Length: 123
Image (cartoon, rainbow, N blue to C red; front, side, top):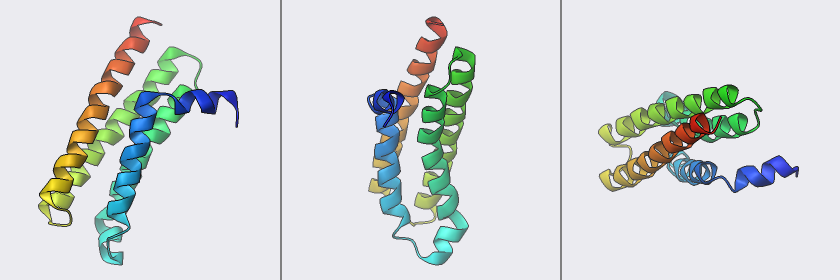
């Protein structure tokens, strides 16, 4: 692996996104085919897009280019909140799973905002 990948793996927001992706996969793989098709695929894509955009932004040189991808990660995070709410509302997950998932997404949201703010400040 290259040096960039090792330093990306140490980035807290990236680590959090991986934990959230792992937890989302545990939910997704329990769905039947129809639930996966109707809501699950969009849910897991939004979740995985958070970490993917963090990784892509991390690999960019110019701070404005990096921030663009971190904004995309934040947009995917908000989309993930939408899908997890619908999963709970449609009784596909329990309220406890929902609460834990939202807690993790809110933590990542807060830390991602701080990360973006620091990049802007240290340009």
